[in-house]
Image (cartoon, rainbow, N blue to C red; front, top):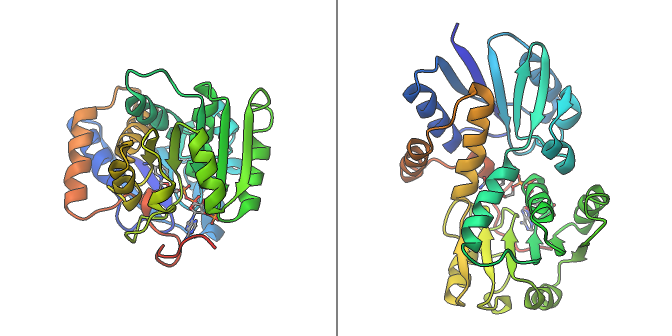
Length: 297
Ligand code: NDP
């Protein structure tokens, strides 16, 4: 029987994940299809229930469902529980297991950006959605001692900080209101800046003014392209990275969870590049509402 893996999101019309996962199944002779399922939040519970069928290996979950899926599966891994977000589901009999492979994906991206230098201890994170949760968990477990989170809607950042209360008890994790002067002051005290908002995804805008960046920063944008933020940061002398490695490695980790075999990384990376050149975008990066052109309120 051909096995099925589905990407559940809203929308998911075009997907880089589809290109890399299907190519990986085909290359390793695994009889499986990767399907894109566009499901509105109302239909989510029924959709997750369908995955209990024998033909499913599992699923990926993306915008806007990562947090809503948490109570719909039977068990979580440590990373899914800690982040409160699920991006990958596997099946054990009729039971569904929720994983968060964005976390290992983020770790690879961070390690690569930091390179041979000592792992920094202070970071600023922009955003408080599912991606930001993986970032904050990754930073805490890498030993960061100070993480400041800025988000357009402060209450969401505060909710995230509260969620991490226990695991962040030994360090300083704070939500702060989105004011340029506060962001600039915090960036002066930090070494790592991560953009986990979708600002810059659909329009050539940066979440923060170029003048707030100092050349000592390591800047990671989760968006899978050279955004305005990354160009401004490079011009200021910062080391920069986009979301490619995170996307690749979250996908590779999910592939191994579904199939039990190592992912063909080089092939998947080539397929990502090919799909991107062909105009596809990550379902991670699909807008959930109107185009992101506005700066934070
Ligand atoms: P969510 O929808 O959960 O969160 C979106 C975030 O962006 C929120 O913090 C939201 O703020 C902020 N935001 C959106 N529009 C605006 C705006 N106009 N002004 C200010 N803030 C805004 O999405 P995710 O967390 O899942 O994804 C966020 C980004 O990270 C996306 O661009 C996605 O592509 C990327 N990503 C990349 C991954 C990779 O593998 N490379 C993995 C996961 C995510 P508010 O809460 O105030 O609405």
